[in-house]
Length: 283
Image (cartoon, rainbow, N blue to C red; front, side, top):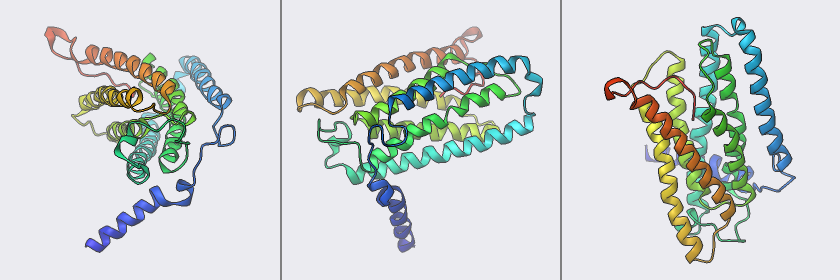
């Protein structure tokens, strides 16, 4: 039994860390697919333009939306893909960090000018970056949902700006990248597990836990940032400080929006009793 477990662990490590594609990965500006400001801006503008156009079209042609059965199938397939991808990134980046880091402090602070964006950890950061473009399809699911749930500002804002954030991780070799990626991918694993169960007709009672974990993720990121700042100002500087500032401001704005969402859906019910969270796909 121990031999089987060891073999499985070895195979897992090979396919998630030691495979040549992963170990030899390098982000090269204007050479690696997606590694240019033009690609980034085109992706975001296309996303915003497409959802705006679809929203107007579907308002007029709502009767032609997919049937509930068809929509549940499409939604379940989408959730399986994102769930699998999120879990793989969380495990892959965790194993890669343990393999690539020279010292535990490396998780919080990449040495300035000596951490090029290459190797297993940055491979998973690249997968994360591309996955956030794939997650644009979340918005399409909201728009074609037969129940016609509203499209929130939080949802669109998050999906558009998180692509910029993940691009900057790679472009600047941003410190804290391994911690941010693993925590985000882990929360998404939980969140899309919930969505998958809902899409097949199961209504778990831990819906509130998903939002709690999302807010906890932001609070944890602020705690990790204090360690990063200590290393940056007391240890000779950390790579990607400017990108970290953008990331921190983005997280503050998201936390404020999530807290507002949380209060509206849990604490502002009649008689002080929290209302049930409305069915939204904000993440």
